[in-house]
Image (cartoon, rainbow, N blue to C red):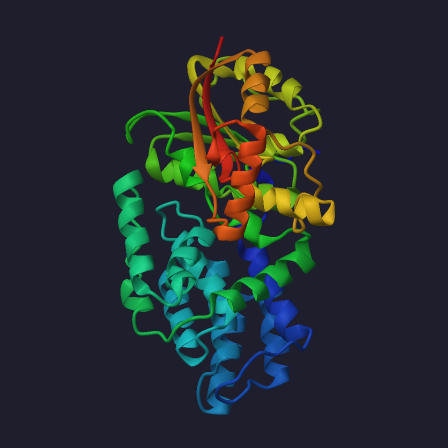
Length: 408
């Protein structure tokens, strides 16, 4: 069934996540509070029930009474309060409540998630996952705050996107364990919805950086396999006048992506494409080719949708990347964390050939480097290069390819 974003019943498309967080943590009896008095179970169940039935005024009144009864706030209460403000769209109070809770328990995964949602609701189009990632990015480099500050500057300079001023919030907090946050939220989302949050939080900024045009250009953009809409969110930030469209097969992800633009849930290989010819300035395909049974047929199908001077941008994983080869050699599989099996990965030559046979002309080809393999793997790569005599050391250190093309 094809569902458009207009069919969602929540005013805020992420609110159903919050309700499920509340039910999962409180109604099911899952507690993770290490500071202060624990809110009585009767209050937690009662308040969570009112949130689920959308009696937000009643939930706030009960929460205030619970605070009075226990002589102060605790982490459980701040999460419930933040969930209420999230569902009602009260960004300022959500922000304040989440901040108060994190000062009590700085590695609380639900509060970090709600904080990211507060960023998302500020109206600048930034996706909750991206903002949360930036808010705790300092933890990715052994607590080095320069990493977070540097990311803000780099993003603003390279893409013209101004990240919300969250420095004053982040600086006073103790170091937050990013691993704990990612694991706790990731486990919850995987159990509830069957997909890994890690695969849908991060935009492919290398791909988006190849989009032609000035920031005020009126672009019409379509992404095939748009996931939760992170790439589309970045595009909307970089091109404020862009008309955003997406196709996503996963119903939950399509619903979340609908906060960004006009997103349709369906299988791009079989569905009727509801677009006119010459509709789009840019068509994005970020790693989605690897999951298609017939990628060439899809490329042929979408070619008429691209304007004659339009841009097809494709990102594809390099099958020869060293982190891909080693699991394949040792464990007989390409990756261990995929939600669905990868049907196809590409060499540089194969990707270029596929694009050409599908009726496009490659204009630009970019190698995106991956992680440093280390000395032992690097020595093995050098031996492989000597055996293959290709003379290209980056064959095994390139993680993905990015290709810009136009239709014939």
